[in-house]
Each structure stands twice: as C-alpha cells, then as structure tokens.
Image (cartoon, rainbow, N blue to C red):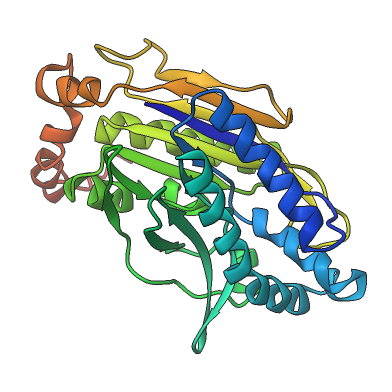
Length: 293
C-alpha cells in the first residue's frame, strides 16, 4: 500500500465551498498517485475558523467554537471524498466541544463509510492555557483492510508509553499529525516519531502544518516537513527514513509500505526492541543512587 503524509498550508478560507475545493484537490492529487491512506495534520481544521469572519478567527475561544461547529460537515466531506477515491483518510484535527470537555479530535474515515475518532491524550502548555483543552477518549487501534493503525496526535508522539500501548494492542502503523510553530517543536515531534518507529518496530507517518496564518493565534506560525519512518533494520532503509519531503514545502510525501517487513523486523530483526521492551522493568527497578563526592 501507499501512505501519503501532508505538509499542509493553513490558508484563509472564504466559506465552506472554498475549503471543499481545496480539500477535493488535495485528496484527488494523493489518490492520483496511488495513495491508499492519507494523513492530514493536527489543527488543519483551524481553517474553518475563517468561515466565521476575521473577528472570530483571531479570538482563541471564538475560533475554537467556530471550528467545532464546522467539524461535522467537514467530516462528511472527507467521507464523501474517501468513498469517491477509494482511500482511507485521517482528517486534520481541531477543537471539538464534547459535552463538558473540549478535546483535540481527528476523524479516521474508510472508503466504505466507517468512522473512528481519535483524541489527543496529553496537552501542551498552550493547549492547557489559554485553550483549555482536556484529554479525550482513550487511544484506539483500528483493524482496517490496510492493517492495524493507531494515532498519536503531535505531543502524544513524544511519550513512549502511549506508542507502546498501541503496539501491544496490535498497531503496525502509527499516524502522527502535528502542528508546530518553530523548528524546535517540529524537531521534537520528528525525533519522537522516529523513536516510536524504532521502539515499536512499526511504520510511523508524520504530517505537519506549514506556513503563516496570522489571522488565527492557534496556527499563526507553522514549520515542518512530512515524512514516513520505519525501524532502521532489515527490510527498511538504514536511516529509518522511508520517505521525507522538503522543509516547509507544501504537498504530499508518499511512500510504498509493505507490512510484511514490519512482521519480519519484529520476528527476525538485527535487534528486537518490541520483544525486549519488558526487560527494561527489571533494569529500571534496580536503579541505585551512589554518592561519589
């Protein structure tokens, strides 16, 4: 199969029709290159704040409410495009008012109409204040026709136990949509994504936002490049980089992935990080502090 990870520019949208044209073009381009699984970034949905006008879009809480209100219609559009092109899509995430909580939610859609939402688990400082976001519903591993897939939204990819839980639940692919304003933030998520591929001996697809959107404080600056990673072991590139785009260059990064390579690396790789993970417990429990001064 082919995975397509987007380096996605945040643009001002003059209404839902304008957004529908943009999204349709992006999906058609990836599908035209043979992609089976499309990954859009974290907070790509902040474009929907533009539908409510500039006064709302420039306000943190106002833009969050506008995005949440637009998400269901946007998910329907993604579902229509997934069916039309025969692809699986992880939508760009956005703030979603779920009862008393506000969560950072993305939606996964299959060509035959199935849906599964994915929520961020650990909030960054900005998401805690001023956004007031809360951890969402538990992590999910989806058993799809492409393979077993999990999602870690941005900051979540920097925490190894979350990925480990997905891998132990059967994940072969982990999708990492992100939004990072500066190079250091992008680098943290990139390093985390590569480490998760190494530890879990799995494929990780990283899709970031790109460009400037001064009209919205949540995504005013965006830095990154899309990439698809694997473990640097037998059946994968020695760097672990299956494919990567150019920094801050909007577009798709697409790679062909054979999940039999994941199974082979886990069973007979030069190292077996997934299988040997529990051995850390013994070593960690025996840590001592020794005074040498």
